[in-house]
Image (cartoon, rainbow, N blue to C red):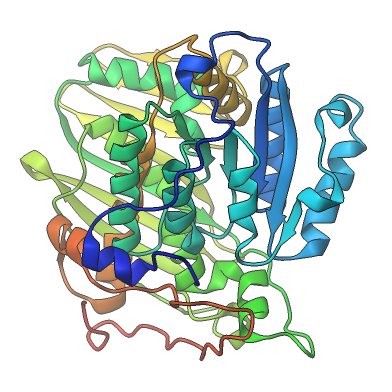
Amino acid sequence: MSNDTSRRDFLKTSAATGGVLAAGVLTNAHAQENNDIVRVGLVGCGGRGSGAVEQCLRADPNCRLVAVSDTFMDRAKSCLLNLKANAALAAKVDVPTERIFIGLQGYRQVIANCDLVLLATPPGFRPVHIRDVIAARKHLFTEKPVAVDSPGIRMVLAAHAEADRQNLTVVAGTQRRYQTGYLETMQRIHDGVIGTITSGRCYWNQADLWHRARTLGMTDVEWMIRNWLYFTWLSGDHIVEQHVHNLDVINWAIQAHPLRCVGMGGRQVRTAKNFGHIFDHFAVDYEYPNNVHVMSMCRQIRGCAGNISESVTGTRGVCDTAAGPRLYRITGERPWSMPRNRDNEPYQAEHVALFDSIRGRRRRLNDLRAVAESTLTAIMGRMSAYTGQEVTWDQALQSQQVLVPDNLTWDTRIAMPAVAVPGTTELT
């Protein structure tokens, strides 16, 4: 990726740097009036980006979408057409042709034209984008995960510290942290209702997902970005891209990150080249402080039993949370459950919280450290499964392996990465 400060330059300097665009900044100090217009920019106009911008525009009466960026023009046009066709949102869309930016560097123009940036690109691009948004002193909503490798995590942690220094609001798309059922459950766990946590488990086991065929004339970069789920440099593998949600819940419950892990996994069903090189199943044993072990599983294979849930066991009870039929339940000495009809819409709630923070109606939010630690939890599990080695938190955090190609252009030639082989693939 071509940037004034490349990822490898960052590793050498260990500092988050970038040009500061001071004009038009709406900081918390200047956002106390509810009639101040917040100019919103969207980077990444696919399904999640289109959903996020809708939720953002619904969350505040005085915000406007003023700029968008995507690698592909068809995605940008489709997103804008759908927004303009929505009678409730059309008046909030002010994106003339000259503020539609296409290409790998279009995100920079979006940053320059807005007060709040929504990031919904493939995760491999996210650390540089986060760094540049914060360096420009703009508020941020970023989807999860926030990186695919350890150098990216270190970049995000530096951005977290800079956002605090600049009094900027950052909300991450780990929406369970804004979901009523999870919030009430966590309050009880942290109040000691289940006693001291002794173990846990979490799952994201589901069927396979979409993929795009390679057509004549596609460059390596275009094909991989259109199939970003299946390349570790773009998605981090599904343990990082998807299972991060469950691992975030576990970190939140235990109020710590793991110390080490041992994982396994493989590529048993999705073996064709159109599925890139990622695994289709993982199982990881995470060890947290006080010898608390958490069993983590994730799978994307059709025809298998599904399970998207988390559970923690304590000295006085057990807490279970699950997707689908939203389940929040504590059994043991002090049983409790929450009816489904009391739950909220977390994707919308996170954007309401975002604007409440920007406008000073609640304490300032900065989710970057928590989501970075949850992302690194997933990355270390992948590192262990790919290599067959035990991986410690410090090893994962200090790893020098850079997955994202440097100086990336549309015509960069990228060979199909080899499928990892435990016991053979080296831990770096």
